[in-house]
Amino acid sequence: MKPREPESAQGRWTSDDMMTVAAARALHDEAVCFVGIGLPSKAANLARRTHAPNLVLVYESGTLGSKPPVLPLSIGDGVLAETADAVVSVPEIFNYWLQPGRIDVGFLGAAQIDRFANLNTTVVGSYAAPTTRLPGAGGAPEIAASCRQVIVVVRHGTRSFVEQVDFVTSFGNGSGPGDRQRLGLRGHGPTMVITDLGVLAPDPESGELALVGIHPGVDVADVREATGWGLVVADELTVTDPPSGHELQVLHALEAATIDATADPAESADPR
Amino acid sequence: MADLVTLPAGVAALVESGDTVALEGFTHLIPMAAGRELIRQGLRDLTLVRMTPDLVYDQLIGAGCAAKLVFSWGGNPGVGSLHRFRDAVEHGWPRSLELEEHSHAGMANRYVAGASGLPFAVLRGYAGTDLPHHTGTIRPVTCPFTGEELAAVPALRPDVGIIHAQRADRDGNVQLWGITGIQKEVVLASRRSLVTVEEIVDELDPLPGAVVLPTWAVTAVAEVPGGARPSYAQGYYERDNAAYRAWDATSRDRGAFVRWLNDELGVAHTVAEDRA
Image (cartoon, rainbow over all chains, first blue to last red):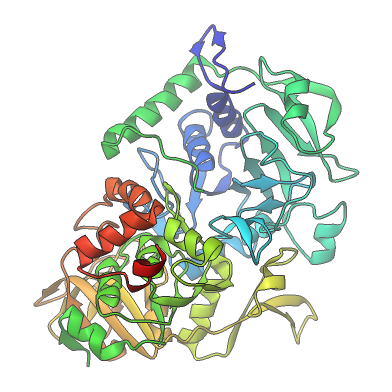
């Protein structure tokens, strides 16, 4: 069930390519997007080069409207500042731009996600004696709270898709409907979780993530097996359009340009 | 007026074991050389404050200089884990490390409160997360005007704030540009400050978007070309990504780290000798 490379009319693509393309398509043109590094950054930069040329990329280092010609290696690369409409301080990016709700989409990754789309990037195991110490919160808790909506990009697997996260770093739908409102969170919260197998979205009634789409070549049974809880499957399941030739060409060119720019053949890893 | 000093003299004059020390620089202009000088001078029991511990604190933690870490994101940016940080938290090597963990928004506001001479800052933050259950410096506060419940975090007032900047003039006025992160706030929040710079020049040419810290707001300035390597200094050099990747291998293994400490810094790891 691991990386498949289906042959399509457009050529070969991996499940990671499909995930990145699906995530890019979720961003509409002219949206203002707060971008985390790694998978979200790659997808956001792909979107800006394909269907969303006016997508505004905001990075937590304080760059508004960055237009990087290559994928940044970190959220504070010089190329993000050099190509930005404005560069502001770190207090300003959080206090003036994120906190009042000026950002449309928060684009986040996670080490663990649960059935209510709460995210963990802090510890696996107990906080006092963790089996794995993860990097921690960064900007994510307030991105998850204050952006108008949150899109999560994460690879599917039973280690990441767990019944309950070991630590709530970023609040999704808590334990069900109404929890966000009770806490006074103003953003709508998670609207979509895009994986290498398909797309999940919170059920409007229960707030619980349900499978609403699968990528080409994936069976529902594959997704169920890779999810650590009894996954609800929507009645009407969509099948994602495979990556187009254009999307693949732009994605691979972006990756190649990034490799050339850094003279380092290894692709940048997940930030964990 | 800031004193113009050498890096070793500046660290010796401003930093003592047991101090609360903040080395800032958000991905850009990380004061790496100053961090290594703290290790060389054998400082111990430091409370290290920094939003993104990065390689600079991984080295200090692995060398046994830190008793406590106040932070918000502890990874090797674009590469993976900070292995010395993880080893300290997961296994207590070379010593246990107390954590005070926040989000970026919380840390940024704590520095703003410190720079502003206020006891605490208010933000819309942490709601619904597990952080307030483990971090005593996150408390609820009620707005006296609207009744709304918000998060309060106490001011950061480090004993010493250390940053790296592009340049200073001979009077000790400091200029930095590009991503300026939280550097102004940490200098103004700290009781004493040390700024390392790429170069000392006769005159600071004005630059759009540059931050200037007047000499009377800074304690000491040291010229340290390349002082942010392997991070970057806009206008001077790029991030050395290969070095960030190489650190992954060096830091992953206690023995390799102890050799690095010995070979690169000339420092013997006192704890490592009996516990490695």
